[in-house]
Image 1 (tube, rainbow, N blue to C red):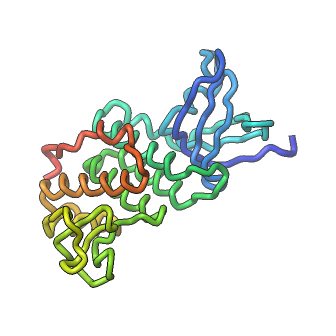
Image 2: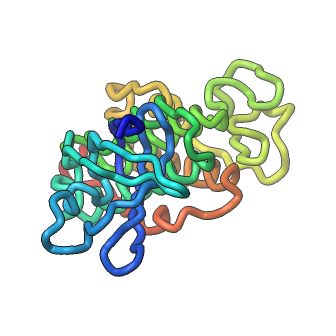
Length: 250
């Protein structure tokens, strides 16, 4: 048993395996994305089946296997799902967080501590229900793209680096563009929209809270377009996210 190892991780995805087992995809603190078999977790007698559901933040013990490692122990650190699954807006935003994390960690075993912390922070914020879920999601997506090296330029021209703000945005060009670099078909977001993108990227929630809702909708569209351009495919969960603002969001 000397080969046993432990790590903390967030359950991104579960898949059925055989009659009683599941393959669990984790985003872990030290080992990055990790897929492991949880034996017998679909049986009602399983000791830790409920701890291995999406949104769960756990401390797990693994035994190296021939093709997939095996989960041998699980302790719950945060049951984020309790504050998420009963609310459609929070649930769809959280699903988009998990799917994005899964897509951004294509290589298993590669450390991704920053992304792990971003996912944990986003799920914690969604479970606490203290902010508009769509804003939490967009802040996560902006920072996750920064982790991947894809963050859109918002404070300077994506092409020449000329300081902004600039009133044009091109996904293909990499974000905000100045008048000289603006390609045909560029969007023309408002100043509020660009300020919101910058505030979300840098975690300036005092600025975020003052920006009108119409800018939030526009910013969400730009964030989604930029992410999916770089992923080169659509996220299944993103079109399901409810983007409307709640009455108490001001």
